[in-house]
Length: 399
Image (cartoon, rainbow, N blue to C red; front, side, top):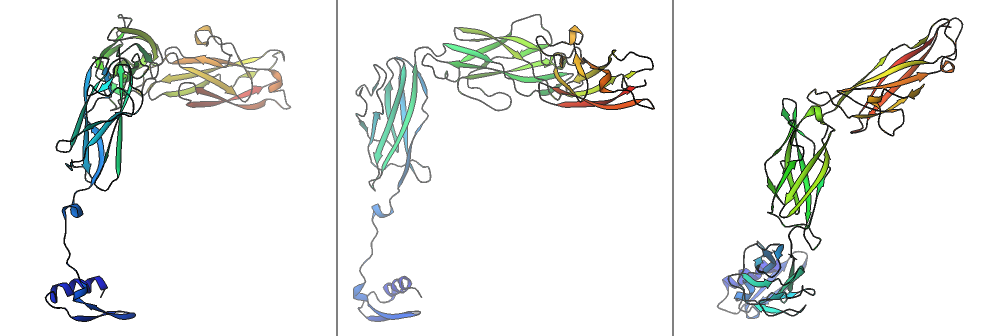
């Protein structure tokens, strides 16, 4: 039996008389304990009092306008997250120089000078008067009954104008199948206040398509900064809207307009290609120098690529990069050319892209007996998502 267990038993049995008792301890020398050596045990409120676990700001905004007032609330919490009223004062102060005209409770305007507040039912509150635009860092500190220091800070952006700059982001999310060839994706814009920080949440704003004659795409309703997109993502200073478009217009550039407060901007976005499907055909599959052809005469094969979205809609504007184990790519028909690019770069029109691959006599010289046959592999990479397709051809020489 452990020593502490024996002592508790002695208190209960022999509390009225002083006797000497031998306590046996396994594997160790015995000891004698007299009840006169056992003192009374009492419990005080401080011994079992509720300990402060943390302090934290709550229901407090991160933004405010200039020349305005805001109440900052601080909760004093136990280790279980419940508010505690332990009669300990809280000091509030500016952790750094505040914007011109800012003060706490109409008193303090200098950094590190405290305003002492007595909590009410575990809540300490103070008023921040904003003054001019800038950033105010308000800190709170207190000492619990153990003498431990607790501190917490809250950053408030004070703006004169909630939005001074905005821009449309040319990066749309993966589309969701909307049926009947349509896809729904997300368009977004980023907004900043005059202090260079993200604009506050809850500001109403609108997206619109500049070309009102377009009938294959539409915006689904208005929105506000900080609101979630349909994927459940949200960010301060960002605005999202749902855009529905027909898959046959995937990879087209669409001009959008974004308006918030007194700021209006325009920007281009590229509509996503969702679930791309590509395939390749070589025509002819057996390009050949037939008997009697001149050695200086090349032979040409067409590299035909088909591209659709995940709903089977033919897609234009899809760019491909071609490669081949033999031959040289020559200029494609004008409609399939990518402006300013090499001849191995082509683009699709109505779901088709056609490149031209030329071979010379030396790549498949005559043999005896004829024909000579050389196997050639041709590949194409879709630049948008790096998906790949390939096909083979047999290069023949019957001379």
